[in-house]
Length: 225
Image (cartoon, rainbow, N blue to C red; front, side):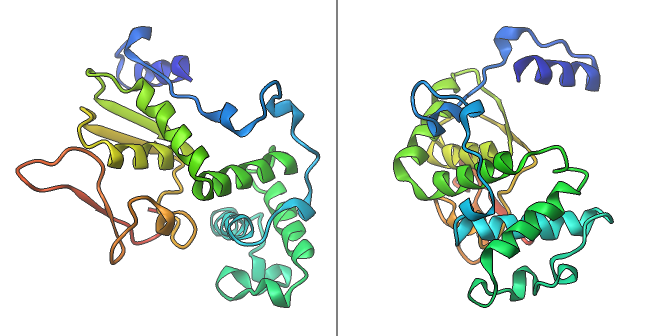
């Protein structure tokens, strides 16, 4: 991760960052039993996707993939009623999940990702948002890497949620810039509404230090924001 980040900065503006200027927070091993690896993931299929948050996130992925990729049929075109109208109680859930996984397998972004890797990601998000011990442990990994000279925090995917909440919990940190890549922070009803601290009237507290008695705030109007 650090070499890739240094290369990206160099290619963008020619700045060559020394290795000691970058620290990486890693929390992925928190999801595995000691002595196991990601290669040991079970052969999960549609029957292993849990109702609630996991199905909702999978459907959101499907709808967004269909929105940006002409090769992916939207859920309603596949015979479902779409995220806004579908009710798991009225559908055969396994068929719905299988349709979503098959649709994503044909997309540009998800096409090279196996079912079990996709399902593992669903479970990662669900566990981080619903398991307090894991939630705190992941944030602690970020906190361990924030020193007195930290100024820029870059976070990817679920890591942007972990980093955002950690920033909100530590307004004393010297971080001045928060950069997110592929972030689900604005995914309303699934991620955004579960953030800690929670949003008020559609607005989330902006992470970082207060200035002049005022704290910055971030407004989210769409999960694509």
